[in-house]
Length: 359
Ligand code: DP6
Image (cartoon, rainbow, N blue to C red; front, side, top):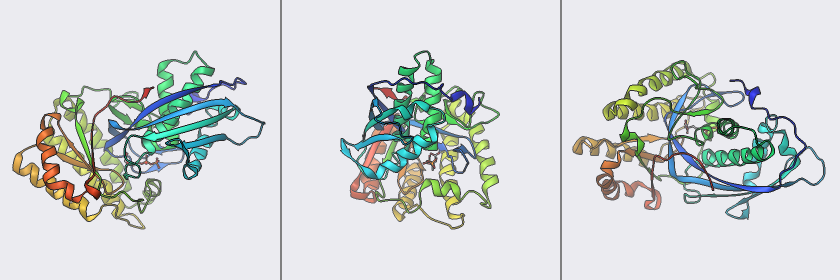
């Protein structure tokens, strides 16, 4: 599919109304790290959609006053004006304009809130951009009622990607893959799709407890980190490895082989951070507590045989992944051994969810 097919026809119509979408965060198992112009990923990725970590955004649509070419919007975070977020939304509107010409006829009132604690260090760009994109699609649907559900969600993911790459995996499905790969029919660099192969029941209710190690601003943003994959000495082998790992996951997802799952997922997390450490300039996003937690998880797994493992995103927090059946033992382990390494003892219990919902 070509980007051209997501261009909405020009319409002079204005829709006055409102929509609200709740979009979840997601945690990648095979990581997206490196991109080309136009938010095209350097390699395919796959993620668990989360359930509780989510952004809920209400968007009011009104007729724009005047005829300027700029965008007209108010942005509220938890019902209060938040100017710091305006540049990101401005950039989002600029990027989606060729596909959504109707946004220039509208004034938007955007009110957004996260389910997770403010400044928890959890990336809200995936859930935030997905919620924005879905609201824009509700506007498009009001203007062009004949668009199909498939087009609605595919284009929502396409638009979310233009806001933040990983956001395209926060629209639909409990396991979502993004990035063109020969072995997954229908896969695309332009949008995420629900993972199309069989997935063992153990993964349908997988748990993700996010251990909040560091809540401050990251030293290096994901966008800068992606950029450092250009000319990176290990880039090509990393991209090939991501393809290989995505292929290997097919039989792991089908069989529920947790030993193989753990080996692949932890390797992906450490490889992501190894890429950061081998960038020029190099950087480290893990904190001493991140490594303490990883070592504790390894010791716990060895002692108990419980298949708990970790993954990391582009930050110091640790996502502890485990089957629902092991929940009580793992929570006890967290309380006994891991909370000491969490900032203010904070962690968030989440699990695999089913994608965004219109509220
Ligand atoms: C490490 O999607 O935040 O979480 O496209 O520049 O907004 P931009 O980057 P972003 O990168 C996420 C990187 C990651 C891995 C992943 O989610 O696949």
